[in-house]
Image 1 (cartoon, one colour):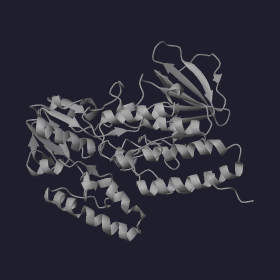
Image 2: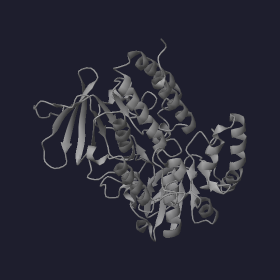
Image 3: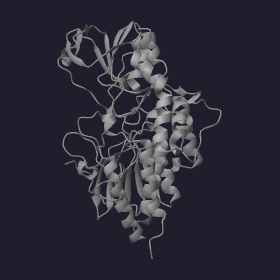
Image 4: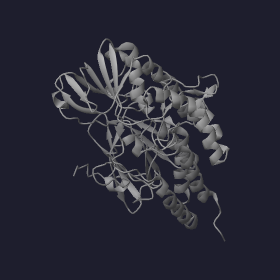
Length: 451
């Protein structure tokens, strides 16, 4: 077990420790401060913004990245994006937005930069001892907090597949996080592996920069254009939310009929669980590149063989560069796995309502979901619920008990999928259902207990 200084921990009383100053961490700090808590936010890098900040040495951001969810469906509910911004803002605009959010709510004064949380340990029942390791120097600090919120995101630990013969491959293999710009694709024969949004975006970059592009996809996906009926697709679909379920399904089927038929023409199978069952791929250029042959689709890889790669259908290619756009695994190293419900080898936390520790009521995780729409509104309501919970848990035992019962009852419908699913699907939630669930959880905090 790692040893730390024997110096006594500095007690911060009922202050809350927030880990990470990316989007989720900033939202957590703001909502906690609004509820009267002292907050210390620790960021291992020297800048805020998490993966949206290219100066963050751990960020895998491609400067050409744009949101795949529209501005109206991505903005934080109490801090709208400027009206004159495009429907799908760029990475640089997202950083400006988060920087403006921090400035507007005065968050930076609560952030300790260059400070990594190496370990948290429960003490005194529901409190935590937190070990902070500064980037400069070796002296770790030990502090005690009333609660901890982990907001480190889940785009830091690459999910790397292991194919037969891969270690003997004579070409170059990169994870998508290592591909900072399209210049590395130029003039090469490229194989892109992975059918999510990153894989599709990289395949489109290769289609116009590489000598050739083959795209390996092992399962079907829903391909959603960025616009439907003259408006952003996610906004058009969200407007159906207030309608009865049968009518919503009918209208969404009509809206998606054209894109579905086009994808079928390109040989792209749709998943059997309907467009709400998995995160859709949003890229208006992809089907055009498949249609004109600049992207050639293949199924799953069977093996690597020297310079060649063989697919399950028996075909082979000889690429110069393989880009593994295979996503990331949620990796939280600062907390003992048992506190997050991690069991077996999957490494996936099993959190109550996808945010609360199943073991300790003062430990929560913000933003560990894939909703298929903008995640920031969901993080806003998650941290709103967490902050309200911490506020009432000691002063109003009856309301706190009602809240815990509601959280447990809501957790079943958001249970983590079987371990055979991909990391992205492990984190998937239906945004509409999950937001409704968060609303019911929050209601139990705001309702007066029965006399």
